Length: 424
Ligand code: 9WN
Image 1 (cartoon, rainbow, N blue to C red):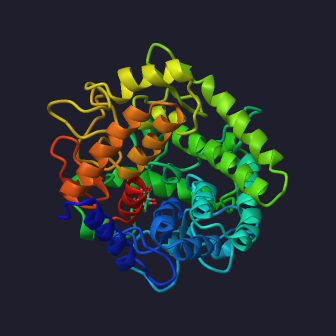
Image 2 (image 1 turned 120 degrees about the vertical axis):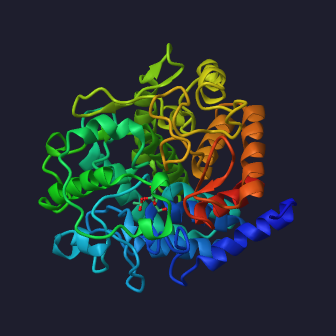
Image 3 (image 1 turned 90 degrees about the vertical axis):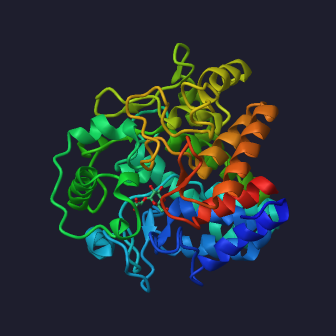
């Protein structure tokens, strides 16, 4: 394992080079052979540090999968790779009126892309590139506003767990209402990864049942109330608030009015502020269909990333929640932060995917959030521990908070990309 900053950066850049298919950087060498939405945006943020031109190509490549109504899909199935199931056949995007020529999924993912374009532009200004991609970013955000908002607050709902941290326990109650469908294929993740580290077959059956129902309406349910799953995810909304601000910044760079984006950002941030729970020292999210949401997942801390809490709340959230040894912070028996589920929660599982393990992208969002909320020393502490974890265990998809051991896929692109950003 590399030990110095230079060799860590070189190793990270090498992972991105190896995962580069020529058309896009795949999230991982074997497990994820296609182009995923927020993976590509996070990869572009890392590429901004070493090869901005390649970063711009990553953005262009993702936008090739854009739907005619503006949605940027969660997966673009570039044709040359096939070792992933469920693949393009599940989605049948060719049958959907708004779909592009290239096969894609019918749902979206947290909109990090405008932020990535801003990071690229700050690292290496390129006005022509902005002129090319800013209209697409604006259309995607407008699409979210139109298709996914459910009241005047500006908050949006996700319609599938795959639109965020899929098997996080916050979705359990909502998913329990969905009758699972039979798995008619062999899960490709099982060929590469330990079943204890991945969602169960029952969860997969429910994910597929939601897709089936959404597909009946070409992935555009007549209303969110009629969607089988509709959840006001704090990770997604906080990422959107920050992305709207970044889009407004990009519009200003082009000398264009970014009023819509800037107003949207303010509205979402104001709405997020009202979700603060003083007793829990964190924010609270909700299931649009009225079930009690499972709380105490790291999404509750995401409004930090959008700069929502004032200094008092940010400090309280840090001291009593993010850094609390019983909840998400380092403790003697689990010294690696930030856990994706509070250790005090009955749902906490140190091995399984989004149900406890540490993820580098989550830490990166929180580090930016702490900086933004005026807690630079706390941000530096988390950054140092995050880099130490990567140095020790490599660029894993996720990590066991107790041992720091690598879990999921190795050579994971966004872990490498965000290491480059954290080092810069
Ligand atoms: C389903 C690619 C993606 C990430 C998601 C992560 C995982 C896919 C899967 O991998 O999801 O979309 O096969 O489980 O949950 O965040 O974008 O890295």
